Length: 193
Image (cartoon, rainbow, N blue to C red):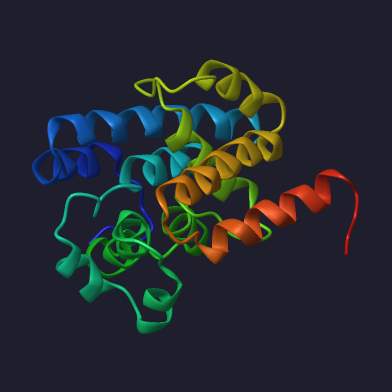
């Protein structure tokens, strides 16, 4: 359908029909933040804008539909339905929209959980989602500012908050998130063990 062409307006119109107004607004906000962060870090801002827009494409689909899109290997790595949408979204974008850019697909796949050794592009989509303008959690303004200074420190804030939240709620913690957190911690301290 779109085969690596990033038609923002076409994607936006499609999403408007698929998502609730609140989720749609969030997606447009994430696209804007991602575009700005990509420019700041010297990456493809058009691709970042599309990835930000599409990151939650499957968020409001029923879990059963999302599960059909996700491979058995990925199902074993997903700890809760809350994070299923990133993995499903990546497959949806590839198979239904014809976008085959692996970096874009991985950014959507891992925007919630992260992973070890994320690319700068993946980090941008993850932190754009976490700090989009409608977010009101404590210290969001500080994390937004930090994203322009040091993406790794901003992501450490995100992952530590999510790990603590999962523990407090008695949920399993995604091993991808633990790997991402540990990788960032080790690299911040210069320890390569």
